[in-house]
Length: 450
Image (cartoon, rainbow, N blue to C red; front, side, top):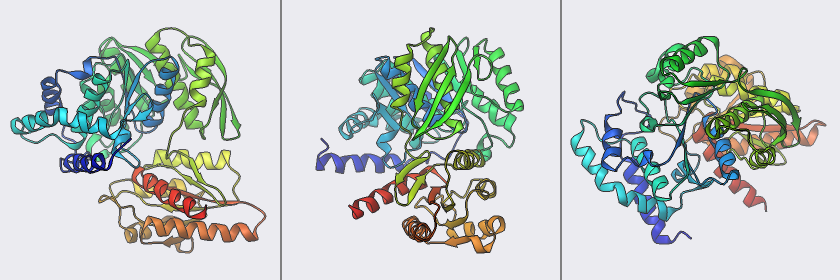
């Protein structure tokens, strides 16, 4: 149990980490993280790893891989980013966030090394590099049987790319973080392909043709063994079910039927197929089908098409780029039967905002724009002006903060449901920060209603 003293110390640790270079700044070098992990004794090399890059679906795919390994009785360590509500979520051990006392102890173990490398490098260790090192050390200390490591941004120069992964995974690639990764899909794919290790196994989700060409060449250059969605593995069949979907997956080593996945959207079926192929590639044989069914039935993906409130239905989704918004829109159209949808949107300023708005417009009837608490948030008035160009002035409303926006959307949706035979809903989206803050606000709303 976390004590009051632990909470104070944990806050001090978080503040110290946040005082470092923000994770949104990317410098194309592994010099700092390499020096840090060398000083720590290369903990990331003390266990086998799965390394995951891509534009969308990385975190959910990581969670699925984690669940499969735990059903196979592996002790798992999972490193993902960004977090929804607590930075402890980023470092997961056997399916649970690292406890406060574990984070404090691990930070104390490496604090002097952080200072040492700071003094020897042109720039100090960044927040993301420090978190990555904390994860590597925590997993080595546990110890884990397998590390499941998600790239933060890109791949080749990402701080996680000091692992020597047994299996590299590339989820769907789209345009995002263009200021760092490149302005074309080919440039972004080349950067992300940098995680592929010589003679390793590489699991690749279905990609646009120009991306597939780049990834194929990278696999050939590294003499790696590819497993491609649509070739070596695929989603065989998909049926919409209550609370999710039922899948048949054609794996690398055989077919798996009657898999219940409690997540919505065709993109989640792709994530499931990629996750299953990843674990198959690692173990080298077909998995027991009952183990696979249990693993997928237990998968959770907070902030991804997550239903967090009833009467009215409120769905939270962390879509933060056009690719994610397209998946959100497709899922709302194909798997729900809402008469109308009230959208709440808070997005980060560096994103393709018009692209996101364009993807959402066909499914959102009325849009409430606002801003999250992130210093990177696009100001509400700027978002309002952009939203009008896509939705028209009569369909766009504004609220000063996310709490007010969610409250307003729920009130308006409730009024519509009271006078209509159909059912309307609220969808909150725009970023992981938005999703995390919405989860907190909706939890408070639900508690107030109890």
